[in-house]
Amino acid sequence: MRKAASEMLDYNGCGMSVMEMSHRGSIYLEIINSAEESLRHLMNIPDNYRVLFLQGGASTQFAMVPINLMVKNRKADYVLTGMWSNKAFEEGKKFGDAVAVASSEDQNFSYIPDLNEGMFRKDADYVHITVNNTIFGTRFLKIPDVGDLTLVGDASSNILAEPINVSEFGLIYAGAQKNLGASGVTVVIVRDDLVGNCSKNVPTMLNYKTHVEGCSMYNTPPTYSIYICKLVFDHILSLGGVPAMYETNLKKSGILYDYLENSKMFSATAREDSRSIVNIPFVTKDKEIDKKFIKSAEKRGLVSLAGHRSIGGMRASMYNGMPVEGAKALVDFMHEFEKDNS
Ligand code: PMP
View 1 (cartoon, helix red, strand yellow):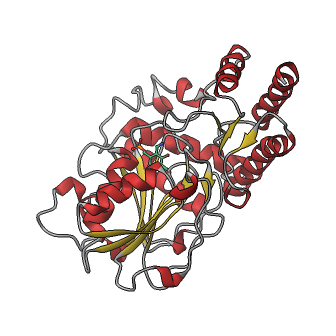
View 2 (cartoon, protein in one colour):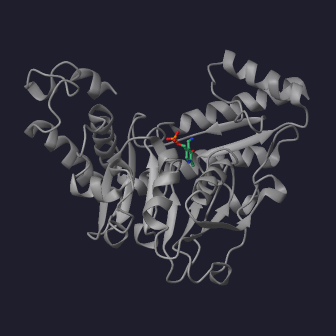
């Protein structure tokens, strides 16, 4: 953000801000190409995958995925692990025979269901998973084996926070606003063979082929958001890439989970074998104490700790931008709060 601020009015001595320049000019082309190159580097993206910078958020991908991929047999299998996967499923149902092959709704999405290859329909056009469940704080510690089927992953909340083996997926999508940069751009990483198979009646903007052929420039891309992504990618590379982020995220989440394991007042809601390292929901046994905790934490400068409006309680979302000191400060405060209120 400091770098963006320093070149806000004059990018690299060219006399213009990034948001003023033509997206087809050579200076901007260098920015978007460098963003793609850095992301390819960070995620080891194989050459037979395209990287797209799109708009409409991950929520638009809930529809673009079935529109573009549910085309051969018009069948898709979804794993339901929370609100975002449910939303993706609801969109999928609009375009063909989408079924939920597994769900953890029976225990309020507090775990990742056991999956095996035999659970998926052999003729499903794809299997959809939400790799990290932002609201319920669970993640796939092991990516399911779908055999020859195409796996699609929503990695909105864990992209660049932990290693993802791109070649296990046919398509990965992620809104930028958590670990990649500012909102307004959505990254899609898609294998070549999955592009260009949809019906001709599909609106131009919803066809991946349009954006592959136009190099994410069929229309004006979210230029400033992509530029911020480039800065974030380069920053992460300078810190040691995804392995370094992963190590720090394990440390941060470890500090909080360790405390939650030993606390008599607070407990984690996600099952131990399914826990996210970036979203950590927790509760006390009393909703009034939860409210008091959130209010008192805010007074200490520990903000945004309320759980998602759909489940309440608390949630610490510690994306790449949060340093280890943030996790320590939270636990120090929880300790103090527990002592004063038990
Ligand atoms: N999927 C996941 C896993 C998310 O966390 C979110 C946003 N929090 C979305 C999808 C929706 O993203 P967007 O707001 O970019 O549409």
